[in-house]
Image 1 (cartoon, helix red, strand yellow):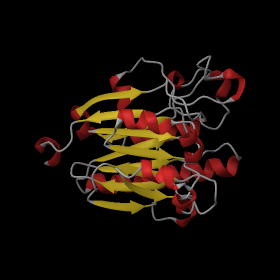
Image 2: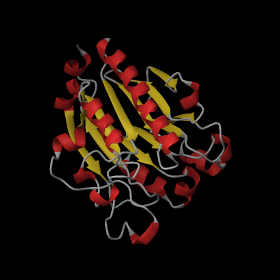
Image 3: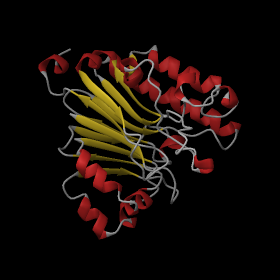
Image 4: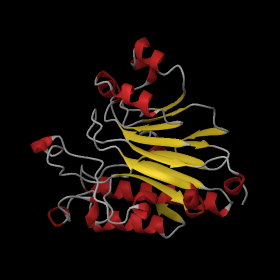
Length: 263
């Protein structure tokens, strides 16, 4: 099973840049998009025709042109839930939860703290509340996959200039500590687990030719339950794929095996 996550930084703009050609070629079983900045009714019939082979679940933000996530699946999940049960977060359209036979998948667009200290506090509260939900599910015997734009680079290896950004939101000590906390709650950053010394990024600012010089950050993750790790086959950062300031990341996992399905 292939699951691809991608912050497209505006779905309409990304589609106009031809990203669907790559998505069609990659052909993931599940596609999780973040920062779609659009409602389905704002997309032309031409684009909806592109999606007709998929089941699409939309969770746009209340505010037009902002945030929002969408999950595309080749087959229907067992259930779908939107948000995390707190209006202060859910009005920004940040989470879709889909339940499959072997795991529960969270498509998440974590808040950015770039607009001031109040948004850093909002971001950390979001981290906390989502982790509470994951904890409850894992205690109940569920296995989870949390994918999307975490808006935090965890360690120095995860951005080009760590020392220069120690006071920048996205690499603040308190933000990075929440990634540590997720890893102590039965979750694994599966890319870093597979490739402990590999330097790859998933986001580059549009300024100063950052992408051409590979001055980037790794902000997009798959955090998965420890019990799922033996069934992971690969995690690929598609750094060559353009169309957004982020690139897509694909997890390949053996799904629907009895070993995964049974506790």
